[in-house]
Image 1 (cartoon, rainbow, N blue to C red):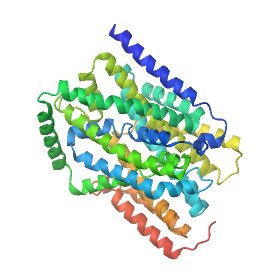
Image 2 (cartoon, rainbow, N blue to C red):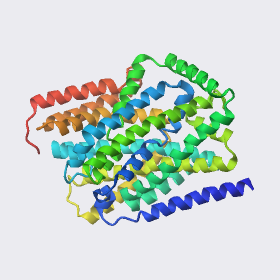
Image 3 (cartoon, helix red, strand yellow):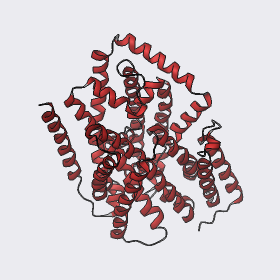
Image 4 (spheres, rainbow, N blue to C red):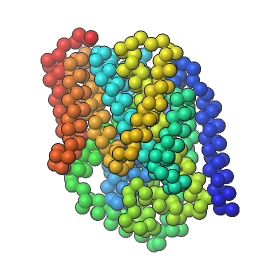
Length: 460
């Protein structure tokens, strides 16, 4: 009986999700595939942004960090909330105001030159592939827990289904399914927290407070001050206008929608981080102390939920991870088409749509291969953040605010920022304990200054 009910719940959820995806319709034009005709309202922008960031990094991984380090990671997560609000106030409206821009690469090409445009595209596609690999790894973990499949089979199923509707539905399908998945997850996990506190944690609120203090003390003892600074910098800057977020800023109906979408998303993230960290702290009094970070949430759900509820929550968890993956696949495909192919070769709209769809499949396949090597969700995210922030942010932000940014400054900053970030991933430099994002950002800003002083305004 339990099996029948579980299968019925899972099947029902999949049917509803499929219906939502079908209602989004297959796209027939490149502008619809890439930017949904720049017609997305505030509700969809807000829901899609939240669904993208509440994926495995800000749910599964944050619960794990709450379990091991208490409120320490809440402080780090709040840096992301501040960043979202600042982007909404200062950057997203300026980006949306640019005409004929589909990507960050377009914006950088408009402000600098074609070389900078193509290089920004290469970095964007690389970032989307890396982050998609992290999402694929997280989704495969959940699928393996449900069906006891080998890792490769879980990866094929998870990445394959997500790629299918992303390839044919483009950004519109991604945004609509994201909003649906976000709504389900945003309701269910806070309910799980209340149930765990009320019925499963011995000692109730007093035990929760004690566990929180102990976990935070353990986290502070195990993390050096320079590591904390590096983590705050990574969460403050590492996800700033990554391609999926930039696409939503550009696809919003107006600059006002773009602004408030990010501001509201930042405010919601504060509540979300509180719930995730609290779930991790509650789990300390319910599940074994040695549980691995990426398995804390799944183990907690398995412990406190009946079989039917556990199965439904796992499927919802998979769908939310899919919402992050589909956003990355679409953003990477658009970046490849718009920032790498189109600057080098003239493409009609129909050909651009075909290239975008093919790129979606290729990036998905590459992400599935790389996912096998991802050590953990947080570690994978940090590597991507460390490269993205120095390589792109100085060029993008300064380009949007300076009247006449110099192409040499943009080119030098991207190359130096990316190279220094990659060098600090090597074991010899990583062993120094210095967070790679700090020297990489400093080097990128210095390179920008040198290029600004030595460069000229001619764009080629």
